[in-house]
Image 1 (tube, rainbow, N blue to C red):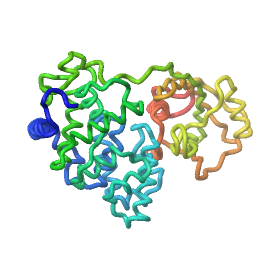
Image 2: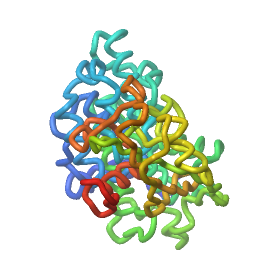
Image 3: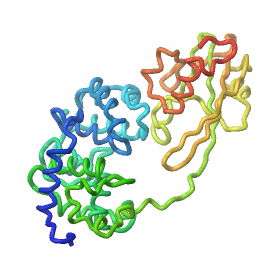
Image 4: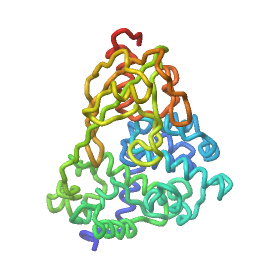
Length: 364
């Protein structure tokens, strides 16, 4: 039941009044919103803050202004415009979904909830956000910010990733979501969680629905929502190889379409502890002119931690060269921005090419 005598209508009215005065109204995807623009923004905003997403969204829209533009673009171009945002399956799903919209809906974004949810990478909450914000349909949403608001308001125990907790949160979202001004209401809920009902220090004195919030009434705001049960992150190690030919070009290879950094271009890898000279002999038919170990790097993912050792290898001009093909390229500095690179690989190459890790005998 709802706390106190604060009804669903009271909740929506208070939230909408607050949103009108304090909500965010000038985000780039709020300007002339269309299902396509809202869809791209919602996918980018998964696991990523608004301040980070904004410049990516603007560049993405400039390059792919419509579903048809996105569907017709090569995946490399899409991944290049996503490079640095992480969670690259999001970009691959966007590209796949755009192709389906082109092929099955004549390039027009569907407005039926089930059809939207059937597209790759779109779940119930994202579908509800797209259709409420861009098509004015009445659908509840349940992103991370909304989960936090509702978990506190109703004092719902448990980690939201658990099935029974998620079911309870959806029931609350359905009950509170009004039939009118649903787009504004959903945006207001996201804004409330992002700017007032924050994870660390909720500003309850500025909350428009504090009157009915059980967590606040009980002084237990920081207990909700419960954190994900912690497990030690597994650790992995790899050795990345920066192979540089006499022209100063660097060898990059496309990773498999699924899995870690799926579809992105990366440096060749081999097992830690193996000899880079042996790799060079196998690949190029000759030992390298020189091998230099560069500073090691570390990258943390949501499910494991990756230690990266880096070896720079100078290739002899007489060595047997590897020819370019669809999944392997020799690239110079000017080529790199057109290719989607994992964040740590981009950092390695940036340091090398700007001279902060210059290889002896080479011009960066």
